[in-house]
Length: 114
Image 1 (cartoon, rainbow, N blue to C red):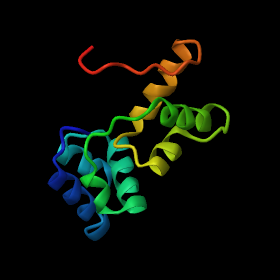
Image 2 (image 1 turned 135 degrees about the horizontal axis):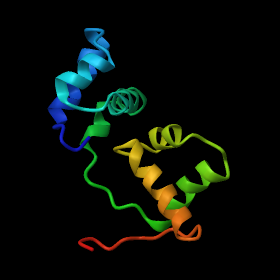
Image 3 (image 1 turned 60 degrees about the vertical axis):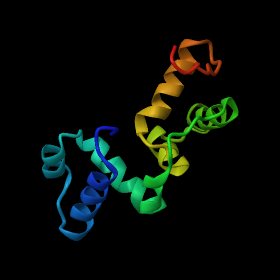
Image 4 (image 1 turned 30 degrees about the vertical axis):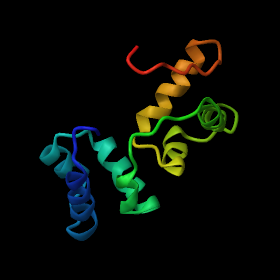
């Protein structure tokens, strides 16, 4: 969802809630996958528009481990955990889980620029 500006995200949310526009229409209008539209709307409903003001975040190894454990051991859905944690995209947690599995269930912290 990084190709959307903050204002685009606000417009999507307003069109969804105030004008009753839905996924297919908004997906075509903004050139974004329907699932990402749904995630964005759910994220704003759960955390408010202020969630869009969060700067780029660097997540600690411990934070990632706890999130991954909720998915792998707690049997929570990736989407639900990502929303609860206020992650910018649902794919972020999915990537962490996949990377963890690929690396022998060890959380790997990548250095910036590598």
